[in-house]
Amino acid sequence: MSLPHAILTALLEKPSSGLELTRRFDKSFGFFWSATHQQIYRELGKLEQSGAIRALPSETPARGQKKEYEVLPAGQAELAAWASAGQDPRAMRDPLLLRVRAAAVVGTAGLPAELRRHLALHERQLELYEGIERRDFPPERDSEQDRLRHLVLRGGIELETFWIRWLTQALETVDGESGTGAE
Amino acid sequence: MSLPHAILTALLEKPSSGLELTRRFDKSFGFFWSATHQQIYRELGKLEQSGAIRALPSETPARGQKKEYEVLPAGQAELAAWASAGQDPRAMRDPLLLRVRAAAVVGTAGLPAELRRHLALHERQLELYEGIERRDFPPERDSEQDRLRHLVLRGGIELETFWIRWLTQALETVDGESGTGAE
DNA sequence: CGCCTTTATGCAACTTGTTGCACAACCGCT
DNA sequence: AGCGGTTGTGCAACAAGTTGCATAAAGGCG
Image (cartoon, rainbow over all chains, first blue to last red):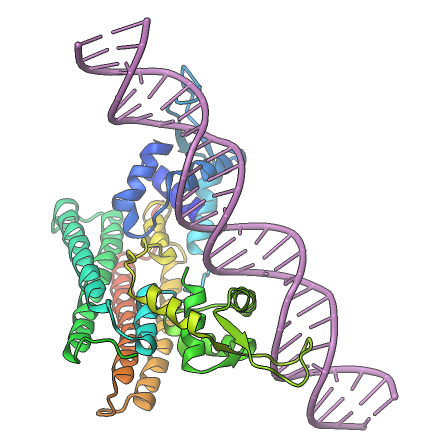
């Protein structure tokens, strides 16, 4: 139930076309919610049909032609209701932790390389986020919106920091003991 | 592609029936991978058909009758291959961060209560994990398996710690500024 | 015995997310 | 005009996960 609300949030921040949304979901929005263009187009269709958003009138409404959407009052109300409703945190599901657990029974061959690769990826991601923090949230430009958005970005930054710390620990643990398979 | 491998890992650690697996996925296994009983039964069927696991022979093989599974060599090989293969971290997708971002545009009504609720849940989860750490990983009982499993548990513990820290920050941010809606 | 609860397995329908591809307009180039 | 790249929208098929319910054996109890 989150994708439509992610789209509503993005469109409220700035009306966009499908492709523009896709790009925003690949960049800043992607810190907390990712989506492919197909998901987005499909959902835009549903949201338009349900009256939550509408396409801005265009001169040439045809295939291959840009179509901008804006949020209607019904959509904003729906988003507000969803954001304040109670929702439990979702169950944990992380492939990397699972793979380490699997390595405990079938051997650690290949594991250190994979951990190092992930470490590098997370370091790059962290740098990216910190760049955005410097650019978009300089000290003392604090509307309520700024503070909340900064808070979300801090979540992304601290999550990446967590992974970097954990991967470093993991590499010490795995490299520390032979580094050969167990099996 | 993770669920079958989660099941193989669990079965290698200890052969089990569907319901036993479900309980293990609700408890310790759930730190890094969760699954419902329907997912598990469906997947057990597929794994058995593909020759990765087999049901241990039973006197009364009938519906409503317990059926234990064990991993076959093919299954173990498949798991080892999967665990050492390259897999990118999955794209971030967190409803709570999204809801805070949505609150930045539609108002923070109801948000503090929800943040406090999540904080309490994560604190309870952390306590649980720390209890397991004390019970299952006392200092200096270190086989390679122990170290790797402890590492995975540490991941769970540090993730919960991250959430507790972030939610505390978030509450300071939200409560600090009126606590009324924005809109 | 008949009834209820617990243990145990499983189907079907649905929702969400992924992958691969098709189609169409526009732009610059030669 | 014809070609190729970019921008833009979209379908179809599939894979993964969720929800609700059906079925059946076993054990306890009056």
